[in-house]
Image (cartoon, rainbow, N blue to C red; front, side, top):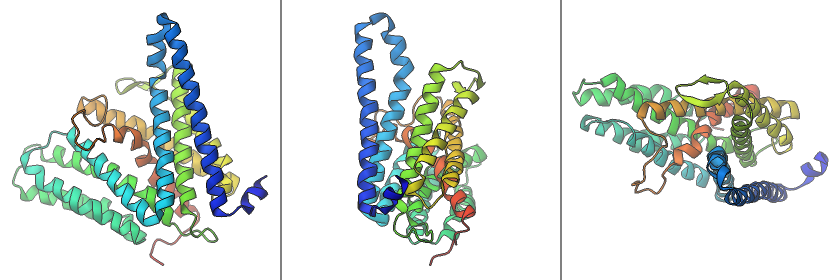
Length: 333
């Protein structure tokens, strides 16, 4: 079976992947639709059931978004995928900033974040200068933002204001930019097939998140961070992480990894996604919000960060794990 799959051309493998991916998501969507019809028949259990499965539906919608992103990334090529994720970073960072208490003196810092650091990061990614790509924001961006803030001559809550902006840039720009970077990794004998790595990432994260949410509803809860999330537990995290690892192991044939390598890569990626979701919940709690974004957003991307936040944590872990394990060169070739 695996030998037959590997004998298929790239286009045939993509067609098969789309058939399996969207067919699986369609079956899940039909199942949830039938469940909603059952809820309407039983008014007593309707509210409890709706609350219990609302997050499962949200994660399923995120999986649809991820699948569509993979499709768009594939048909648009590396350049189009880089521009697409740059736009997503812009909208996600905008949602993040709307929940912060910024001041007039922060405007120049925000301009630098949105219109200098973000495009330069993706330009470096698109040109495959991965040696600079990995340090540009953590080093140069980290130092540039407080310098611009200091020049505004406003010391009030200086550390808090800059830490929030820096954190938003690291999550929404640096973390997410590693997703299109997967398209450009140069594995020996795997040239031009980077979109399969992006698909691998999206499917591992989606499987882990859906399994973790179902486990939260079905297993007895033992929250480890009750004031941040009453539903997060290590039991559910393990279920989600192991499910993501299993999904990655089954998809090893589309990657340059062997089955055991794919399983290990998927395990660390799914684990990072699960903890990343907890961190984003903590940030929302601190901001006093239930969801990222707001109803008056002129971008129409309300709640975008809720859907892609786990990718912002999982993508850099997967990218650097694969690069480090296979000792891929960081410089442009």
